View 1 (cartoon, rainbow, N blue to C red):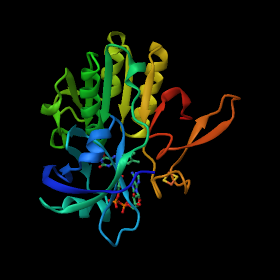
View 2: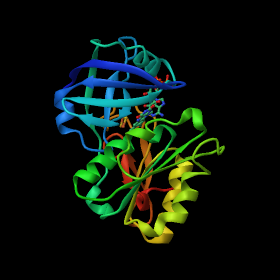
View 3: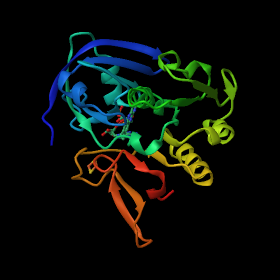
View 4: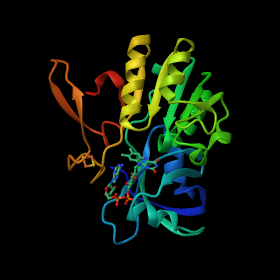
Length: 253
Ligand SMILES: Cc1cc2nc3c(=O)[nH]c(=O)nc-3n(C[C@H](O)[C@H](O)[C@H](O)COP(=O)(O)OP(=O)(O)OC[C@H]3O[C@@H](n4cnc5c(N)ncnc54)[C@H](O)[C@@H]3O)c2cc1C
Ligand code: FES
């Protein structure tokens, strides 16, 4: 169990409608963060439960998070100003296992699943791989972070208002033969479609699962996720502790 770190907000900015970015000075967490992990943030004194937000990027001693305003906690976060203090736990969870994704991995993000892919592509590059990215958004107005990716990135939109018209899974189907492994984060139907393509193409695939969280330390079972046990039965994993990243083959879709 990690001790809380009091981070200092360096910058809070709006990226698109309802989407915000926070740059936080948090040397302890920044020095240990691996791609695919998250920070568990106390969002104001009235909000007893911490909120999990993925690590989008690390430039030690700072880390960056990008989030969508959903309810009270994320609204509070979006109202932070430079020099405000943040109570953080992290880095939390199991991130991507880059060694299993080979020399040409592809990182696929859908909507608010795009931010963790930024740090993942950077870590893959630092490890000597040649990553690509496929980034999917609802429409042009929701496109974020495109310019931050330093690897080849295909952007697609559901309505065709920007980039390729279609879903990330359509793009993956066309390009799968060029990759050695797949990592994905986004809505469950998207992850399910990607897992099926990976299986057909015989590619290793890791998915970052999102479940509602309570304690964030494996104690409350709120974040249980159904997984395949070796004997063919069902076992439950904790997204907060055993995940959020799982092998796609482990997950019961
Ligand atoms: C591993 C992980 C990484 C995440 N990374 C990001 C990210 O990078 N950017 C981003 O915008 N969102 C991310 N989320 C979702 C984010 O945690 C929720 O949108 C946020 O907790 C909602 O809190 P709220 O108070 O605004 O909303 P409310 O709906 O008011 O939240 C009420 C309670 O439900 C929990 N909760 C609600 N929705 C979720 C959810 N989808 N997942 C987990 N707990 C939830 C909250 O923690 C809180 O305890 C992530 C979720 C997980 C599990
Ligand atoms: S959030 Fe409590 S066990 Fe995962």
